[in-house]
Image 1 (cartoon, rainbow, N blue to C red):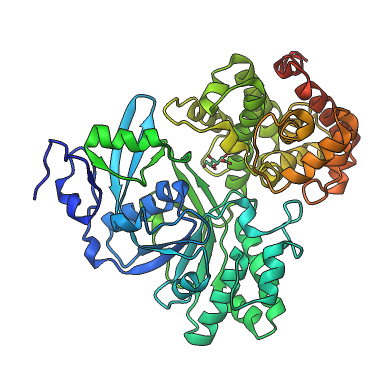
Image 2 (tube, rainbow, N blue to C red; image 1 turned 90 degrees about the vertical axis):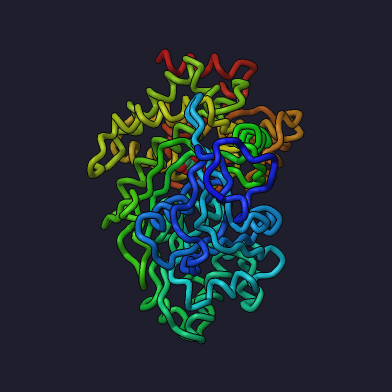
Amino acid sequence: MGDRSEPVTGERLGTDLLGNLPSEVRKPAYDRAKLRPGIAHIGVGAFHRCHQAEYTDDLLAEHFDRWGLVGINIRPPLLADTLGRQAGLYTRLIRQNDEVEARVIGSIVRVVDSQDSAAPALEVLSSPDIEMVTMTVTEKGYCHIPSSGALDLDHPDIVHDLANPQAPRSVPGILASALELRMASHGRPVTLLSCDNIPTNGAILGNVVRAIADRRGNGLADWIETNVAFPSAMVDRIAPATTKADINTVEQRFGYRDSTVVVGERFRQWVIEDRFAGRTPRWDRVGATFVDDVTPFEHLKMRVLNGAQTTLSYLGVLGGFEHTSDAIADPLLATFVRRMLTEETLPTLMPVPGISPSAYVEQSLARLTNTAIRHRNHQIATDGSQKIVQRLLNPIRARLAMGQSIALLSVPVAGWMAYLVKASARFARAWQVSDPFAGRIAAIADRIGADSEQLADTILAIDAIFDPALAANDAFRANVIAGLDGLLSDNPMAFVRRVCAE
Ligand code: CS2
């Protein structure tokens, strides 16, 4: 079976189809049958398939080694029916306006569903074959308190896991139990690499896992100190949730069915702290960067690219725009976000080796105009309580410490509040939201109604999000109140226009 240029007809992607794909679809350039599991990844969503799994595919093509990936889901969706049926193979589309580039990724050698019980995940994570565990479990997966980074001991899953170490449910609980099994069975070192957009993600992951290990009182905490590394990493590529249209695109253009297509932009970046335990896949050979300190890269990415996305998501929903690219096509929102980033965010950044921050701002804004990436504002707005600290509140704190204005950065903070307030019954449930604090904020809105000052003060008093010193800052408070008032009004864009004119 050689390449053929005529598309295959409607067959499902799988090992047998690999030799029959249209020649324009790039295929794994190595013998998948020889791959052995070496990396486990928790959270096989669109981002992982578009990022770490692609870097690993590149690495296998360039320098074949044992680093096959085992993909584990501990939350929905089930993987068996999708990736499992396709032998781990899936199509990664790069879309840049009118361009479509297709590639089948082969680095995932096995998928494991562990939604109902931790046992299947623990079996993989404690295996001596696995020396690297990467994860994309979303910000809230770490069960930490956003404002402090400490493990949330009141989190129901953590309460459960502390009482039931054999049957953990949370990511920190599952990892602590897996490490315990490793310690007891073979003792081989392992790196746990967070790939989520939380600040100092390695340090937070280390904190939450150690906090559980400390409470086990069986030497686990000491074993972790010498055998486990928690490097921090900055990850980047815009890869929204896959839609039916994406699946249809593959079928129509390339002639085969793939229910796990993923779509991303061309840009990608991965900066990893060079601190590993055991052997490590050499992702630095294929475009990742290993550095001593990720902090400057992480600030740059979360405050600029993610800060812009979050800002456009809240102001976008309030202004009636569906996707990021629709919001940034609006001249007012484009002006607002560019001014916010250049005037207020940029001065909070540390020097970043090899990157000009102002060029990075322009590059980031250009990425957001890509109309082929259908990134819904509601998707980005999800779990804002877990995102605004690193994207907005940390740069605000930095500016306040330097005595600088925060008039622009406060607007998306008020936008996040308005977004959750307007989802309450009192505001006729303008839209459905998903955020761990949605219920609490809806209850506040139902009780208080439209009084922006009281609303803002009550929300600012949530100390898991707003550290008390920030909440008490007069300038911040005044800006958030004015922002909430303007954004809850009948014409939120008129408020944005007024701020831009000042
Ligand atoms: C987005 C990110 O949904 C979100 O919170 O801001 O997923 C974003 O697209 C990625 O971090 C880009 O690297």
